[in-house]
Amino acid sequence: MAKPVVDFAVSGTKLHLIYRPRDDTSWVHDRFAAGALLVIKGTFHLTKADLVKGNATPDQNDFGEELRFVVASADGEYFVFNLEILPVGVPVLLSKEALPTWEWFSAEKKVSVLGLAAELKPSRIVIGGSAKDAIPISEYERLVAQFPTPYELKRYVLTRLAVVFREHTDAKVDAEAKLRKYVEKRVTAKPKDLIGPFRQLEVAKYEFLLAQLTMMLQAENGYPERLWQSQILDIVRLLSPKYIAAFESVGIRDTNTGKRRQLDILLVDVSGHVDVIEIKQPFERRVVTETVYRGNHVPHRELSGTVTQVEKYLYHLSRWGKAGEDELTNRYKAQLPAGLKIHIVNPCGIVIMGRDHDLTDVQRGDFEIFRRQNKNIVDIITYDDLLRRLDIVLKQFKAGR
Image 1: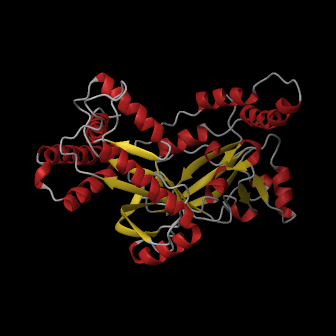
Image 2: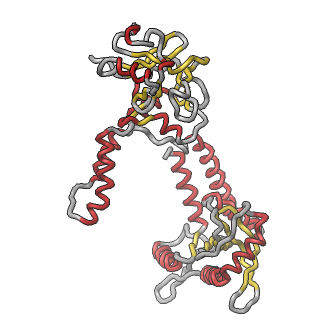
Image 3: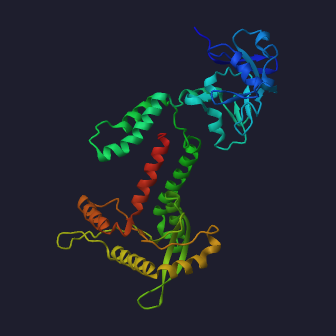
């Protein structure tokens, strides 16, 4: 088996790069004599001064048709590469335990792997060893093994061509699908489990919220309305963490009369957009009537009235426009992240009230029709909806999914 053109070997405290030209080595010495660099695989920049003693001239070559260069020196548990030999812009350290090949440094078409990595702006590149910022050797080997091959690069080019050709011609090959299939075969990296380290914390959180809501519903008469609203609002925000702030008793302008209206709670999301929420104590109240009106179970008056009230708030908020955004931003800027501005853009409403656990199938169907009729403006959530959501999320976390 032929030896590789580029190889590495340890000699005491030095790491040697071994270069075996396909022809003799005389042309390399001629190049050095002319004061030129030897650039190997677009990565290593070598001079005559880097030659190991015995490689200085053709007739002093102790290693046959190969040249040896000192490319790195020992420092603790690492070899540190000469910055002029490996000029990627950041220090490169290689564990003494590593057995590198030229593929660790150079990809196809003379592309410097570490040069590309340096474009990500790390303070240094460490391969193997015990340093905190070290890339494990096994991980680095897997990375370089998955670098694009000439075939894969061809597939990328074909995919770019296909974007235009399939639009304007009768080209039949789906180049993108072929590329995706090929990459999926080669790239074996698994996504990192981001949830795992927090799973037990999430389970504990949702167990607590479910127990808290269950207890509140069993003793709802013992809660003043303000305390009830505050507790339910906390549960809603923990279930939907996009809301970063909630302001109570918010005065807004009635654009028809010029007077002021006061909405109970204004929600602000991470982008500064606002929504309105109304929270009513359930008092074991069903959301639709037991009796029927023309064959239908209709929403209780309090539910339909609350939905109408929220829709009016949304109407006045939207008409208030830029003037309202500026006033609300100025009013609450001390309670918002620095620089965040409030935006009024198609605000939505949320109504939390009533129970549905003991509805008949007919009642449930009529309620769902009413709920969906209003869903594009107001989301109607029962307390049993909240219980179900908490229970499902909790089961999902416990199942490890």
